[in-house]
Image 1: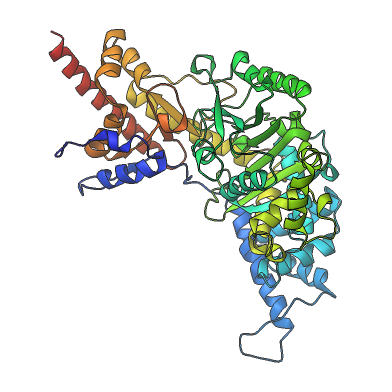
Image 2: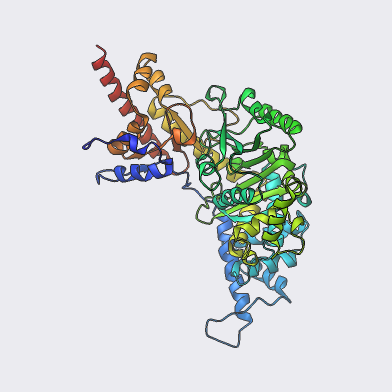
Length: 531
């Protein structure tokens, strides 16, 4: 590298902020293509539900123009309700050869025959919804949209023991907004207070590590560390930390980020046992990668009354730009119970906070407090994810629910696993995975690479003499490859996170080759200094 870099200055940066510096370095030369495996934005996406969205939009526009058919100025009105279903069925018949239209016909049949919903009312909701001509109503989520997403979540989260009537949803601007809203409302309603202990399942998506320490919260973090030698599962001794009554909440990403491993059945049972003893423990589980896993079961299915579920459609459907997420709670949940048991003075303050939106604020459910808090309470009447976004979310969910052969999931898993094999094959290693791995990301373990490519002594020399951040900068500078530091995700050993979702197979092979070349250079340096 041309200029000596002070790597210590980057020590406190979030991995995603460090990434920007690495990208600048990787782009500094014009004689190569930058390979950015830093972010998890997938380069695959679901096409059929998008085709359906645009065709539905065309039908909705035609319906709108019918209301102002006497004018010719590009003005439409609200869709005319009488005869809407018949006109929609005519649209399906006349355009059946058009991509996206058969999907709409099947979806219309599915919600009627399989979900038992009123197809006429559903059609009215999605036609008006895709036009975006009304405020979202109800505030949390459109009526039929919520019912469909409930069915989707219960299916995908392994929570079929629950019924749609058992849960409530709040549609949010992706998982990011969901996280933000949950943290904020838990603070506002004194479910967590300054100085409280919260447990965090590590490694984990960095905001779960960074947000609690902000001045807004000032929480004490207790890490529950997964063991890389046990397939990134949580040892029982780590999980038993949750028995400490001073720990108010447990935040976890499942499957994990970046190890990309779902919690196994043994650990789920241990957590259920702990909740049995600690009925006041609040669990927040972020299950965005659960859809990639086989036979996935969320903590929302295991400990429903104690668990807040955050789910995003971003990764599985390649929809990061759509900002589609939901928060789910059961109607009988510990959060509402804790709020009712708050000190009288605290409840008076909260009643005043929400008194402008309900006549009996003390009865306001936590999930509805989330909605109100997300719009500073005073703007509660404009809450809710935009209606076109909710309609696209519904179409995504229906595409998976109607895919009896799980062909879309099988294709995604095949793509990701081929990329994983290409990276490690060209690195000169075999990456052994197990049934719990979804492989959306891979953690490239520096010590393991050096040991397996060469020997223990070289691995120890690397750990002693090389700054892991330096390695990230070198590979960005010399090979144009951008990776993120594992340390930023609370990984306990020197490593780099690579997304397996956002590049093509040959590019992952190039990343593996670049890392192998760097290892060879370091080994040559080691041999020279240890003659």
